[in-house]
Structures are given as structure tokens and as C-alpha cells.
Length: 455
Figure 1 (cartoon, rainbow, N blue to C red):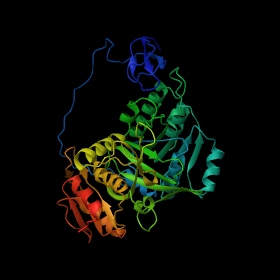
Figure 2 (cartoon, rainbow, N blue to C red):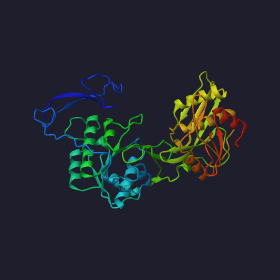
Figure 3 (cartoon, helix red, strand yellow):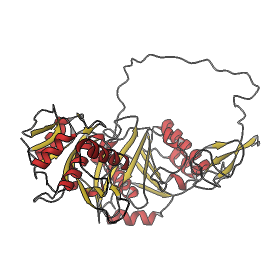
Figure 4 (tube, rainbow, N blue to C red):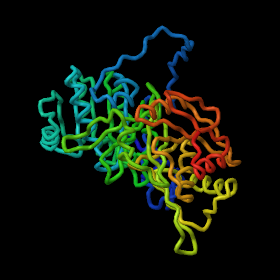
């Protein structure tokens, strides 16, 4: 194979450079550029042979092609995030922190799919076959008809998959795969990209559903070049905070379903248990609600979820007040504090502020603004909200409380768990018997908390 030249790829972000440099211009990391030899295939476009291409054949948007068929793994939360099951011929990338339970989840999915008649192969580059069997026995899956293999050579894997017909193949993990067509070591940008391309090509050609397990970097991003995320049909992130038993499978990309869908699991001694009603997992026990505690009615993917916001406003012991937040965006916390001080007259500039989303769940939707503000105001005023009250709404910089989507779904979920009141934007109608305490501006919400006016 002729050497036509070389480029330099960053092993951190995958940015390609024409010459070596000490620092990558893409991610600013130092000493991460590694040489990649480029070769030109005999039939490449740059060859002098005349082209035999016939040109593109264009088609319209209308089609009678039915929706792609799916098969189920039996892990309902996993199937839900994928959009209703696994599509044959699709490529799925699953990422997560070390020890969060990626292999456990996929082994359960493999066993469930095999029990339903699908032919499943589980290929591990990190564990021996006996280790996988031991884990399966601990989870009660020892009798599942799953084919196991421990291999890192891409050539051996491709040859084995071409000999046998499989419906689902799980590769754990893509960072351990190695192709002898490239000189770089396993886990490098070159190897990850090349192995992912070959496996995705096999998935499309043989109509095999391929699930790739990916490692993550220290900031939570899937390691390797971003081109891998573009190659696959779905990108799933498996998340979990240390010290909490629950795990969340979140869809970041899905060509066959909705994005931002979540599946909730609870880790136990025998593997992962599906959580049908996540709201009960994230809410505390019953009893009188303390000042600074607010229940937020949120939406995660297609399902409503109730979660508790906890705030503490305390005198500052130092010259510079401290701001600490867990489970919510620190930038939005700063905005809410500014609106509370300038529009509502709450003096929080010289006080320490702590905000926590109970249970370790991370909330990203703007509808949580009012819940966070209500928790802060409740703690600052030392006035607790009613035990049966939920809160949701978006706050603008002018202090206006803006309406949010799917208010009725939020209220119905609250009613299922016994909530009868809601602090919400003005204009939200009563649903499922939940009475609305409307607030057109944030100052109205603060007044309701201070005066305990909920009618």
C-alpha cells in the first residue's frame, strides 16, 4: 500500500492537521497530535482512469415504503428510548462513565432479545468469556441463548459475523477494537474511526443491529472522534451519580425515534431494575415540607417526572458569598438570583446560596426556573410551600413568568401522586383536579409564598 502522505489527528477531539503542532487548535490539548498515514486506493477519484458513474437518480419525498420493522429486547425502558424497539440494520452507540452499568444493561438487553427468538452475539474486548458468564449467572441470565466471544481484532470479528447470521451484535467496547490495516494503537482516533466505520458498514450490508459501547472523557463526552457519533443512527448516554442507585438512559440522537427520551433504572445486586414511575424515586418521603423544598413538575423526553428542588440561603461567613448548585445549570441559577434581587426585592447578594436537585437527577428544561426561584424564596423567607403543591414555569429577565409546554401532562402526573395545588404561570387551566395558583410575574409568586396565599 503506497504512502501518499500523512496528516496529524488529535487523539482527544479528532481534529485533523496538515502538519504537526504542539497544541491542537480544535480542543487546545497539548501533545495529542499523532501521525496518520493516508493511502490512495487503486480506484480512487484522483486516479487517471475515466469515471463510469451514471449520475444520481433522484426520487421524491412520497413513498409507500412501510416503517422499519423492530424487534424487542424485553427491557422496556431501553426499547422506549430507542423509539419502540431495535431497528434491524441500525447502529447504536452507548456511552457512560466507568462502572455505571453499561455492560450490565446491554447483557440484560441481549438476553431479553435472545429469549424472544433473536440471534444475539455479545463480543467483549474488555472481559473474558468466563467473566461474562459469571456476571450473567449473578443476574439470573445463565440460561439465555446468547453467543459470547472475547476478541479485539476487527478482522476476526468481521469474519465471524459474516459466517453466522445474527440479528443483534454488541461490541463492548469500540475503544478496545483494533484493525491491522492501521498502525495506530487501540483506542486511538484512527482505530476508533476505522473500526466504527467497518462495523457500521457491516450492519447496513447484512441488516444486523450493532450496538457499540463507548468510553467517555472526564467531562462526560463520548471519547474518540465525533465522526463516530455522526456514523451511527442513535447515541445513548447512560448516566448515574455515585452514591445513588438509579441510572438514566438518555437518548441524544435517534434517527428512528424521538431524542431526549429517557429510561430510568435502579441498580441492585442482581442487575438493573426498571423504574416504571420515576417520580416516586426522585421524591422524598411524605411529611411536612421544610422551607426551601419545592416539588418541580418536569418533562423528561415524553414522560412527566416530579423531582424535588432543595435550596438553602444562609448568612455568608466570608467576604465573597458562595454559590453552589448540583443538578441544575449554574448560569440559570445566577440569572434567577439576579431577577429575585432586582425584580422582587430579595436581598441575596451577601448570602450563601446552595441549590440541589434531590436524587442526583440533572434538570435542563427552562420550566424549572420557577421551581428554583420558589425554593430560594422559600428558604430566604423561611416559609414552606404546602405539602401538596407542585411548581413549574419559565422566568424571563423582566421578571415575567412565561407559560411552558405540556402543562396538562405535568398536572396529571402530579394528581397521580396526590398533589392538589400548583404554582404555575397565569393562564394554565385546572387539570385532573389540581387547583392553580397563578403567577404572572415572579413577584406574584414570592408574594404567595410570603403570605401563604394559594387560592
